[in-house]
Image (cartoon, rainbow, N blue to C red):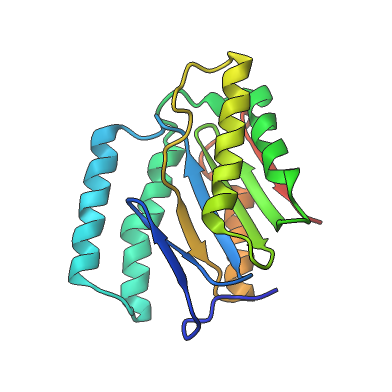
Length: 202
């Protein structure tokens, strides 16, 4: 398995958030339902993040990086775990549609390592195969699952997914294990006993 090399070439794309890809390195991605965060809360988070990045342009030392994740990555996950919105993925039929899409090209276009389907968001840890694109992979998961979910008539949420997503390149074997543990423990941390799916490659 390959990990992020800060000295290597990075393919960068952006919507409202920047997205990094570096060949076949491991990636941790989070995407969430369109109503998973109140609009005002999300806008305030984005504005605060933009201000932080403007005041602290990369590259970062370890302290600045830890401050960023404490103020923004971790805080965002806390907001998601508060279970705002319809939480449509509590329905096991809808969660299964998402799980099926995650597994559809596993072993062909990418390799899944673990994921958690929470009531209003999804965490995925995976590695892309050579010449595969992070935006295309993410769009395949979200676009196809959204179409299938709308066909069921089980959710009135339209659009189903928030357009953007969060990703983080995995830096080391230790970081990989930390992220796997976070995914595995996310339901318990959010206080859930039902309404979630956790999968991990044996």
